[in-house]
Amino acid sequence: QVQLVESGGGLAQPGGSLTVSCTAFGVLNSNNVMGWYRQAPGKQRELVATIASAGGTNYANSVKGRFTISGDNAKNTVALQMNSLKPEDTAVYFCYRNNYGTAYWGQGTRVTVSA
Image (cartoon, rainbow, N blue to C red):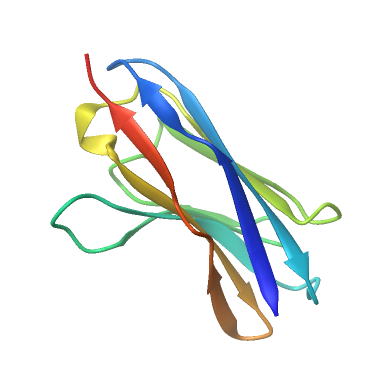
């Protein structure tokens, strides 16, 4: 069993910055992918960014150049630095980990971008 514990998020003004972080607990494999998805009201959950334990990253086109994902495989953590935030970034952000082929999700942390 894997548990993902998220922190961060909150309220930011357009153009502002926020960071969300996540730590994985449990029986963890070293070869993994962690990342972030988000779900806005009335919309489907969508990929934001992922990072593989080998270091490769993947970003949604909508956040490229504004968001940066980082991970520490030894500490089983992943963080998402969000800059130049836009109102359309408002959503619940979910931490994700693929562990031994099974997908795990955090409980979600809310990010609101509003003036």
